[in-house]
Amino acid sequence: MKYLKTLSLAALAVLAVACKSDDKAGTAQQAKPQVRIAKVTSEDIPQTETYTATVESDVKNDIAPNTPYRIEKIYVDVGDNVRQGQVLVQLDASNLQQLKLQVENQKIEFNRTSQLYQVGGASKAEYDNAKLQLDVLSTQLKQLMQNTQLTAPISGVVTARNYDSGDMYNQGQPVLTIEQTNPVKVMVNISEVYYKQVFKGMPVDIELDAYEGEAFYGKVTIVYPTVDQSTHTFPVEVTISNPGQKVRPGMFARATVNFGDKNHVLVPDEALVKQIGAGDRYVYVYKGGKVSYNKVELGKHIGDKYEILSGVNPGDDVVIAGQSRLANGKEVEVVK
Image 1 (tube, rainbow, N blue to C red):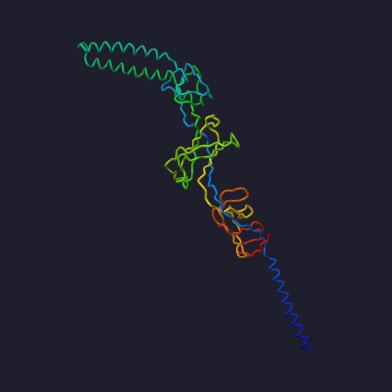
Image 2: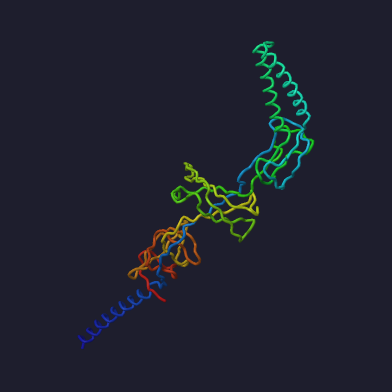
């Protein structure tokens, strides 16, 4: 009887150990974090970059005489459209009249000296001196005539007027500034990694803060041949056709350049995890019942997904819910 009692106690002990083992197994099974996963795919994604710039006129000319003159009349004002060759400013012509008289008198003197020289009545030195005086005065007259009336060298719009009629021009500022506003241009600095992909005539999409939601278009007209050593960028000129002159110099612009398509992975927004204290992004990739913590390089945000440049491969399963209890290498239970 004592033997049976001892045997029963031993059996109970074994049973208790077995039950505890089953309980532990059950607890371990319940301890697996539950996650939802999604399979990622790859797509051809346009590789675009957007650059900010300020609109500039295609050509800009300052209008001024080459010496100080009194301004008799200014015929245009800021905002006026002008055509090439149009008279813009009339300067004091009193000096011009005096110089014209001097030229006429010198012509008479030169003709007289030339006739005397031909018959031996004047020396070669006298002839040469009379001719030199006439040439100098004629050149001065030509220059003065050019400066008595100032004309527009280009067709464009007056963007600055610094004097009024009656003022004395003092060579401090131009009388007027004329800018050509059709076409206009923007200058952008593009990373050297794209140098071989930028070419003359390349299309560029333009957005302007002044015309929100309206699309404008430009094209690359100059690709500068040097790269800035400090920024590793190169300047590119983009010309915008502007027949209606809606686009004005000084406007803030965004120029978007498409460098072609690349096949990259797209993952749902919910898959991304931000590392605490850093700007790095990670995703949990599920494989064989476990998850791995993969650092990823983000591309563009497209709808409810992110373009992934590295860190995830096409066909991978990524965790999109339940990341808060995960760690690298942890076993998980997938639920729908």
